[in-house]
Image (tube, rainbow, N blue to C red; front, side, top):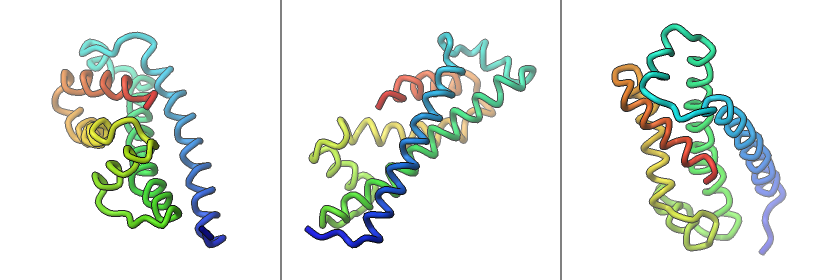
Length: 141
């Protein structure tokens, strides 16, 4: 198969961006999760600006990586393999079948978690703490 140079460049760019985003997420994850993140930790966000910034960085980096991989890299990779990309769940299912990811269901759960961390954390600190711990558990994926 012959992949046009412009598409090869796009894939290489997305691979570099994804690698950087992975490194940044791992760094933030290590700083935020020295211990298990609890509701008590979440309560400190109002008085600890460093913790608040780490939390925002984690949520942002977790979400950005989801967007880059799921919405950009994976469709571009499928196109390079002469496959037609579709909806996110279809692309994830195909990526699982090709062995690129372990579980499409887990990736969909990560995408939903991203939305929960972004939208719910202001109102319910128990939801925030739980979502952050779940996000932390997904970081290796």
